[in-house]
Amino acid sequence: RWLRARIHSMLPLGGTNANLSIDDALKTTFGAEASPRPRAVKVAVDPAAEKLVCAATIPVGGESPEEVFQAVAKLLEDSVPCLALVCLDGLIPEAGQADCAMVAWTPSDSPVKLRMLCASSRRTLRDEFSHLKFKEYSATEHDEVTLEQFVESTRARTQRDRKEAMTQEELDRDEVRQQVAKEQAAAPKMLAGLAALQVKVQPSFEESMARFLAEQTGLAVMATLEGSSGEELGGTVLESVSSPADLRGRLPGEQPCYVVMRGEGKFVLITWLPDNAGVKARMKTSTFKASVVDRIKEAAGDSGVSLAEASAEEDLDDSLAASKPAAEAEKAEAAAATPETGA
Image 1 (cartoon, rainbow, N blue to C red):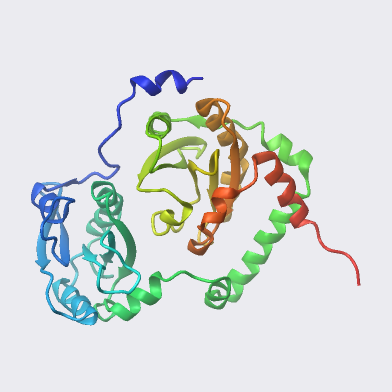
Image 2 (image 1 turned 90 degrees about the vertical axis):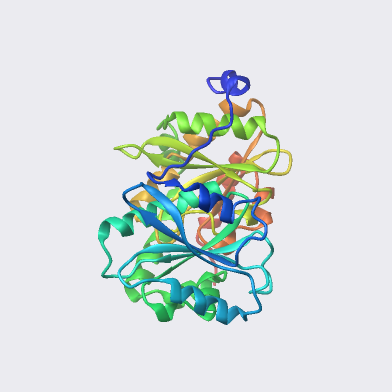
């Protein structure tokens, strides 16, 4: 109710969450109206002007995909962090015109302040160039900026890949996490108590949900727990999202969050619990899930809300949009966590 009353009076929001603005020349060079768009753009930080600027470009030519990444590597300066945006269309088989790489160049001996500014500017660039789909790739050495290493680093990971990449300590921690999840699912009385915890809603979540509900297609809301106590719900609108697969490469790698999107005749709440996130952060996100569902129902009226969960890029597929309603999903999770018996 508190949100429905604001929907018709709320205008779509603009702006970004980073401290740096984007120089007009960069917007013109790589924006939706750019014609022709360069193959790659080097984005540098101008601390004096507090802007992200276009420091260099690589035009579209006859170079091979490997040569394009070699040319990008030559633009990267020792000890000077920057970001390189590379159009992937024609470089890798599955890439389309909207697919791009965002290479985060952060040499280990570079100034901490510049590294932090570059890191915080990734979302700024995503928001400004929301018509594009970015795959992020981090590099600290020139020999890491190759097509082969980019493809290997950004491909969808299987469960076996994740296990093989884990240390024994990480494997033990993952086993504990799974056991904790089973115990929580098998304790409905405790879960009912946790559901009483109410998350505080920030204006950014209200505004994001208002725009999401007003514009019927192509949007999703990414919600995160914020504030000094981590018990306040902030929101950001994600554009060009028509299915869970469109979220790949757009969710944080080390921070849990929620994603609200439209499913088959209902709303779907996807709880994103990446493997690299801290145990406390994952547990807190799970704890407040019921309260987040309540907030969505308040905003959306009588529309149903289904629950889904993902922890890796490959989990983000269309089956999540057909997830069961919240009550049924909780029962299914508890049943799946019950140990099997027998010989």
